[in-house]
Length: 80
Image: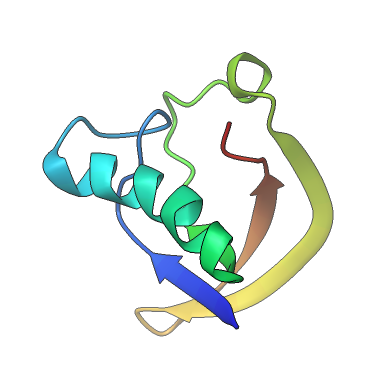
């Protein structure tokens, strides 16, 4: 099973709320059950990729936001 978690914050990258903590623990809790987990969260300006071992992917994805076409990029990392 592949579980995708979409969240506005996830610790340690962004946020300090209970939601951020929960979204950081879920992947580790689901993995022993055989789940492959992907967490999708915004890449906020204050996140330092090198500090967290994140790598920028070359893939660009077109999205429409408020009637405007934008391209988003992907940053990839693993929870420790």
